[in-house]
Image (cartoon, rainbow over all chains, first blue to last red):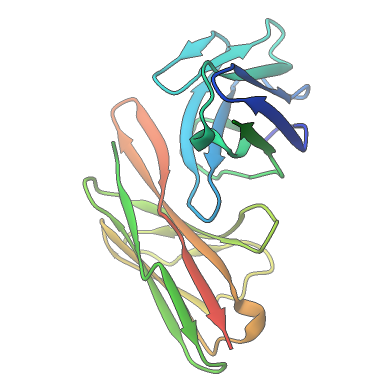
Length: 111
Length: 117
């Protein structure tokens, strides 16, 4: 699976949009971009995933650049409960469903 | 959504004892479950892949005789830490894979914090 690069930490004001970047310049054509988050002392939570089109669900939006070398996870109205470590993972959506977690980005939402 | 539970949520044990952690998929059947370990301030590390009815596949560096995995049913996988030592103290997290039609996702349990004295 391709390697990803994320900033170590970010801050965001409550109520504002949080934009979390991820670089995956070596992504191959059949690899998806997945986002998970982990609130302190809890198991990871699936957020969203996409291949090349932008995706949106009730939690977030995923914007993938046209060359697919980077993506941005957008939390439109961040709340204090969104404070967590956010992981960007690139993998092939196939039968070998291993997830390799990097260090992620610690997003701190401030009041 | 798909729910995965773990039991216990935390456990404290003496060095040398064995500890069993259960992982259950509550509202779906999971042919594949995964076990991760997370040390403080570090990311999740995959320990093993557990397939129902067959032997688990362990990642490099994980001792299979120390971390016994049993996946006897489509909704239950267990991880037994045998002869636990303080260095085994960690946050153990399981996940279950749901494969239904076009859905192929992995859902995580809440984790079990193991402290070995």
